[in-house]
Image (cartoon, rainbow, N blue to C red):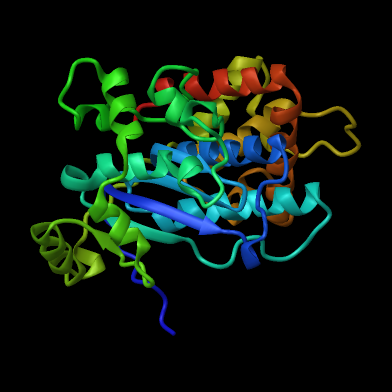
Length: 324
């Protein structure tokens, strides 16, 4: 059986879904949910994706994503792979966690994005056994942020959805819209035995058909990149050390070299360099050492609030400092 068609272009919107292998649960604890959200945050920074809605259920997830750089496949591979590694370590399991490649529905933003956002947010009460009595009580979706009941993550984008309502009282209007019921056309679309790759009006579908016929070489894909030199120089200046201390491995050093760890992860997130290239820059024999460093830092960021705050401060300052 052929794989579903993957249609990728700049600024496309997708409803992305995936389910646990054998319908097994993919989230067993609050820590699991939190780490998946962390994976989304990392993907938003590294691949410049925008998350416009999300809902994490016990055995599957829903994401509404915009891709300014036409890179949905890379972003989702990162999210699913990073979370699977974490889950297997945390729960002493191995192998694939999800049932296969994610499903992605290309969404006609003008006509259906608002309805898809509602469909995603209503998931906790639309199951055969509702997880909550009222939507606001479900904490693993972006709904509470949309109606201003909880803080909004930096990586969650709400304003575009609000703009589709055309009303001033955006929080109350969205709450009323979501709590009404799902659009019947949308219910029929997602209820089909074979889920289609595109949800849109006839004109949108025709436009997509025309786009598919365009050779990849003629598509304009702009990927924003930062220089590794800029990242390393910035960190050296911040920590008042020489760049040599960042790019050189110091044998026998027991304490954590945070400037080097920060530099490796920020270069991975912001420069677009692959692991092999980073291995050369940071003078390690094998690129697996880069992955191991990033994993150690990810663990530190989760466990140590001071490290997390320092990393976020550096990342945010660097993104403002470096001209793209």
